[in-house]
Length: 364
Image 1 (cartoon, rainbow, N blue to C red):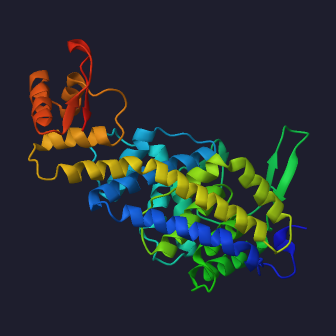
Image 2 (image 1 turned 45 degrees about the horizontal axis):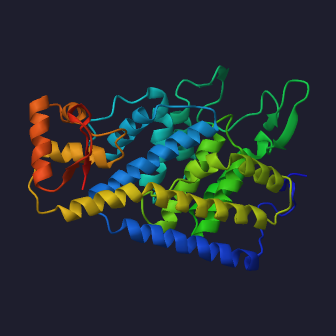
Image 3 (image 1 turned 45 degrees about the vertical axis):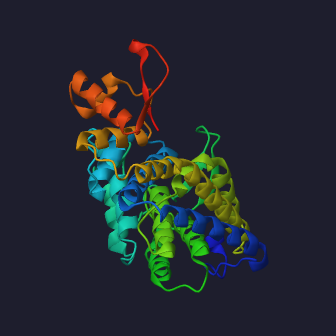
């Protein structure tokens, strides 16, 4: 018996006592990260959000076997967020769909969830009406014309059915019940609400394809609602991607279990805490960048110098040389050298050890 076949579905239950400590820990870590990010300026705050949403788009697609170029995803997200980023190339059209969904879910987190909105997300993911080489129903609940919706693995002839979703004939009623619940003010903790929303949606599996990506977007939306902010500083999709084996194991166990979802909630809280820990590591360069500009806030430099320094502080790969400065600053080598010499005089750059041909620089 699958969880949706239980007599009292979808009235989930859990053990509050087992959740108290991990929930408190997750909340503490969440508050610490949000507090840390609040001390950096708006521009760096927005840059951190761009990095996280880039990770989100790449990871939620990677889980489904799709791989996009980071620079293209970042470019598209920068445009959606209104961030000027001249260093990035044109966006990849194939990535536009998931970016549209993620941005709508997080930027418009206060807007009600509706059938039309979910259909719009689905249409954005599959603008051609195909998933790979397969024709699918777009912006509509699945109809099961080719058989029941099943999650399977293994070669033909030896396939394992991990899960079978509710039949198409009850989907509309089930989805209306889910949407109503999602839009209601809940008495449960908002982190638990996000975990339940994810489980409930993937259990219904209402579309022919794209259910996982939309479930993760709903999770982001629920978390944005819990923080009352569109600013995303951690990526649940990235963490789920890293823990995908444990994720699928826990999901299958829960969907074949009872309505007591304590183990699922515990796993979700652990994954959430791990996502926060990863975000704190990734945000170190943001804090370093904020401290750098704070130390040198009274120094007057050109817009070109500021742009190149920002590129370097945002995770520049390799050594900073005069030649690379000229490329980044779109200027001649003599101009690049003058820029660098001025910044050395201001105490913003230092010259690393090495001969004239190997001279490189670092921020101070």
